[in-house]
Length: 149
Image 1 (tube, rainbow, N blue to C red):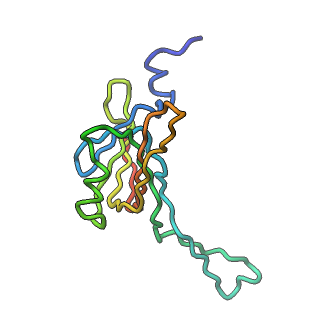
Image 2: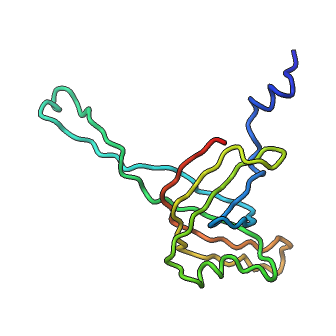
């Protein structure tokens, strides 16, 4: 039996191409966002009977800074990456990446509290290619949280 449209909407995964990125409340266009991950350092404690019982106490409370990459096409008059790097490259900004449904409404939002640019990569210049020019901004981020709207 075929599933209803409502059941399909609830149970099928959302397409990854329908996303929106906001940086400090300003919507920005990107062709790709990669590297969003929530990682923790682990520490294993050894107690007096660890030789017989094994190492049983592990803590996961030290969050790691993770790299994030934002890619966008080079557009005349749009210097988003340059403005961010030129203003004060050490200032952190808040980023929100929203995965949207077919109507454009956010369904899942990954919030990044602090993002600091570490590297700007210029597009590949190749006279034999007809590909679009894509700039890449690498960031170190912390304070990642996930919100299901």
